[in-house]
Amino acid sequence: MSKDLHENVCSEKIFSKIYTKYSKDLYNYLYYKYGESLGPNDKMQDAFIKLLDNCKKVTVSNAKGFLFSVAKNMMLNEIKHQKVVLRHREIKPKDYTIESPEFIIQEKEFLKKYQNALAKLTEDQRVAFLLNKVEGKKHAEIAEMLGVTRKAVENRIYTAYRKLKSEIEEL
Image 1 (cartoon, rainbow, N blue to C red):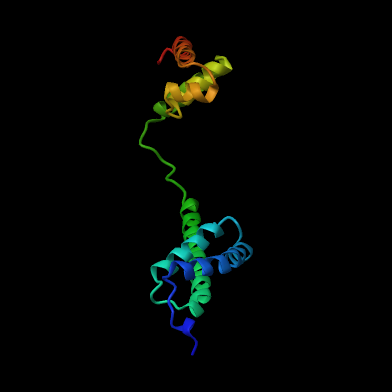
Image 2: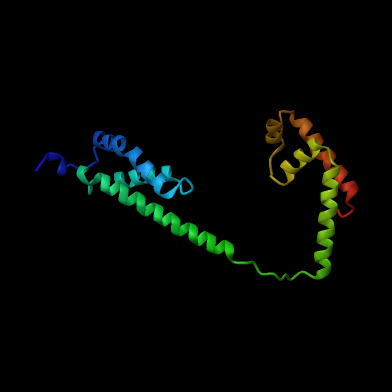
């Protein structure tokens, strides 16, 4: 028997050769069989990590089979997971609420007023206001994103808030 049948893949040199030899083939196999949506590159990398974790148990001659089997099983597990996710998306939320009909009508009216008031803001004010209040961005982050000073962003947000407040008496 040759020497490499009994060598494991723990050696950095051997592992590197295996990676160089099989990584592209493994990626292509996963990509062509399962598509891009399941992350073939991630699964390929994970398969090599598993190989490294089990390097003492896997011989050089069995490395290719080990990698392809592990990667295939990871993809199949991902497909099962995606099916569970889809099944849960199909479950309809309950179509009743504990709120009174008056509350629901008031809520819809308020939302219409809010949307109309937002539409009356200038684009700069609306963008800065929504980035701050909806996205939760800080003034400095917004300033960096928009390419303006922090003071300009503060002014836009506070001006927008004052206009909204004057438009909507509930605020």
